Amino acid sequence: MPMVKAVLKIPNMSCKHCVMRITKAIERVGAKGEVTLEEKKAVVEFDPGKVTLDDIINAIKRYGYEVEIGEGGC
Image (cartoon, rainbow, N blue to C red; front, top):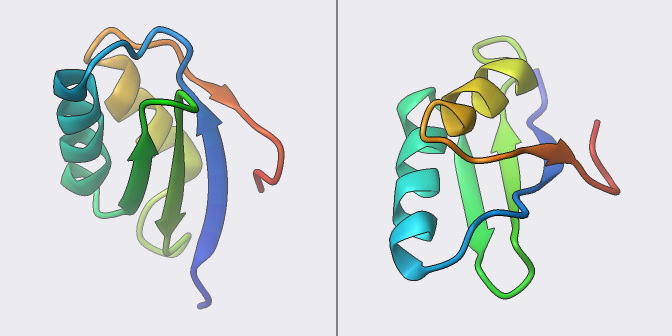
């Protein structure tokens, strides 16, 4: 199954520590993510056969961040 990319907006991300925590949350569920503080977003890449976009969003929300599906999401 091909990898899927999605853009997640995380408006209440405010520092490099946030970037680290969000990256860790994304990786913990088995996805890859490129988190950008300046743009307050994460571009995630995942195998939909192993993990869902909801799994990724919920993992980030568990750390207390707001998550919106951005442009170019699946």
